[in-house]
Amino acid sequence: MSIKPLTHWKCDSCDELVTKETGWLEWIEEDDIRNSKAKEFHIVHNKKECFHHSNHPGRKDNHLGECLGYNGLQYLLEIAHNGGAGKHSIHDASEYVELIRRLHVPYYEEARMNFVPYAQEYGLDAERLRLSGIKTLEEIAKYAGDQ
Image 1 (spheres, rainbow, N blue to C red):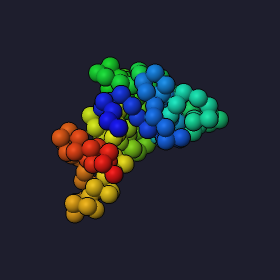
Image 2 (cartoon, rainbow, N blue to C red; image 1 turned 90 degrees about the vertical axis):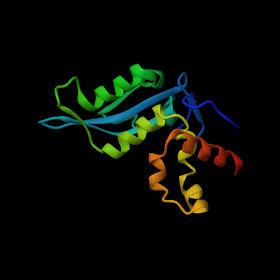
Image 3 (cartoon, one colour; image 1 turned 135 degrees about the vertical axis):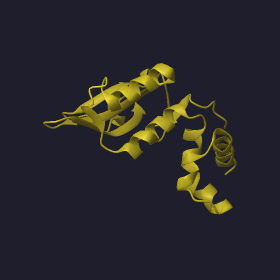
Image 4 (cartoon, helix red, strand yellow; image 1 turned 180 degrees about the vertical axis):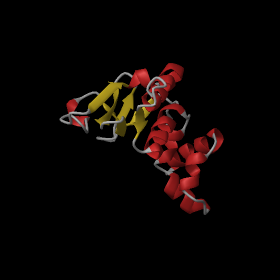
């Protein structure tokens, strides 16, 4: 089944599809004396059974629709930069870049679960596929649909 890119994501909890209407972005923010660190980002359904951090005192969240498009990208960059104050930072930059790719790079979400089998079939480095351009990601997404 072909899905229009940047309209559906895989729930990090139940593996069902999430849309901007049904989705939620959640994470943990831990404070120390000097700054806060945001970590453990999850795209989930907006329902308690899919939340990863329901009982964590540092749980933060937002409607997935607020994290999409140009304004959503600005919002995500603001989480990393905290209004220029430099106090807020991301605990794991790789995790955060992965989140931004999932939400903002066409075909990334559809292709990412198939990087390893695609790389094995074509003798490529699966980690390097994360850096692929849109055309390659689209090809990998179609490859996934053929499996």
